[in-house]
Every structure is written in C-alpha cells, then in structure tokens.
Length: 208
Image (cartoon, rainbow, N blue to C red; front, side):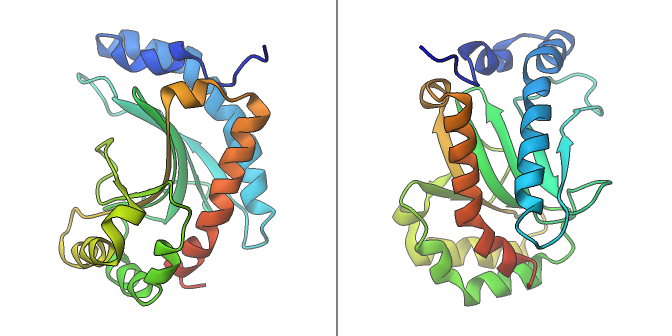
C-alpha cells in the first residue's frame, strides 16, 4: 500500500492539550509538509501567468495561551504578508483538510470584491457540487454551494459589504479519512484541480 501524504497523526495534532505541546507537534509533523506544499503549489500558481505567488506557512507566533485549532500554508502574490490580499490556503482542522480561496477581514477592498462577485455569482453556482462556502475562516463549518444556492451566496456577499468582520471563503473540504487515503500524487492532483476551478473566481476577486 502506498504511504499517504497525510496521516491520522497529523489530524490528531489538534487534539493535543496545551499550547507548547501542540505547537511542538505542529512544528515537527505538519509544518514540514506545509513547506513541501508551499514549494509545489506556489510554483503551480505562478505558472498560471498572473504573477509570482509566495508561500506563507502559519507560525501562530502571537499565541500565548490557546493552542491553534487549525493551521495552513497560504499563497499570495506578496513576499511579506498575505492577510490583506485575496489568497489561497491549504490546511487542516482536526476533522478535515481544506483547500480554499480566502478574502478575510483584513482585506481593505471587501466592498469592491463583493460587488464584483455579485455580478458574476453564476460562476460560483457553476462550481462542482462538492465545493463549500463560508463567511468566517475561524470556524470549521461551511455551506455546500449547491445547497445554499444563489440566495445564500447573495446573502454572504451582502454581509461581506456591510459587516466589518465578514469574510468570503470558498473551496473544498476533504474529511480526515478521505485525506489520509490519498497518495502524495493524488493529494497534489486534487489540490491543483481545486485551484484550477477556483482561479476564475480569484480573477474576479482581484478585478483582473
């Protein structure tokens, strides 16, 4: 049997008690994998010809008490910082893997982004039926795009324009069981195929 890229132990890191112990496990088990993903996926994103993308592995450096419940590597067209820019993320919660396009609360152009997305909302509804959408990257739950439909999407986009903390997160989740069954090649194929589907939405987000 081929060794999977992700293991059950990777997901179990988020059950480890205490900041110090969980951070040690994150740094030794998961962040090296994020570095591998960072190198391959930033090259893949950059090869699309819209500019250079840089990987940013989450360090959780500001945490002093509460251990992180999720972690990720982000991709943005900037060497320093990514949170104010629309960006891609690949990461883990204890329950699932996520591959997403994210506009989070630090972004200064949320109103413009919401307006552009609203005009092109059919691009969102035409995504494959396993895509999910959310208004908060701090929560593991998300809505299935197909289930919330146009009305739900418009509601999230309206909130993005009017609520300071509102966000726009779209992509795919893969349960921990499904993720651990993928070989390294299968995982990267899945990640790149997800990005392929998200990229036209990214273009709208950045006003390309």
